[in-house]
Image (cartoon, rainbow over all chains, first blue to last red; front, side):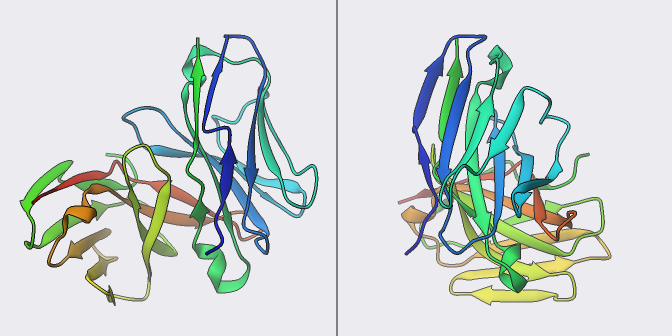
Length: 115
Length: 114
């Protein structure tokens, strides 16, 4: 069964460093998303992406964040200068078009630890 | 309260019993979905119910939706140890290109005791 894959599974970084979280969405999906989940808290929407541009972003997704689809398969989330409060699980998701776009398929997540 | 709150926060039952979890939300929705999350893992889609539907079944899952009360329930029948996980409701709001941004609830931690 097709799945969303995310790498790395765990990323440790120093405060102020840049990190890039990588995702390979399901191959025929056209909508892509990033969410995050701080330990013990809700899953929060960060950004959605369609047709090579951001379609919606939350207030969490400030200038420190960016997304990119550098080729036909990868979808990345970059955090330019990490803060301690960026420590969280980051989930990538993708969905198809038409009525199926309502169902988002999630990767296993990247645990980001900012020290 | 926030959009998408589940209750109870935690639920422990004996294997074979039924588990019921509830979700309340505040704004109008297009669809409501339930997801499962095993510890330290990603979210797995379980079932979607549209705003014009009142009840839906999938295997051992039964979901109800009451848009007048802005609430939903998830019933898992004949629970199994493998059902131990956190369960989240998620509502969607249409974005600029029809992307369905999901707003998740706080989750119910379900523990099935063998």
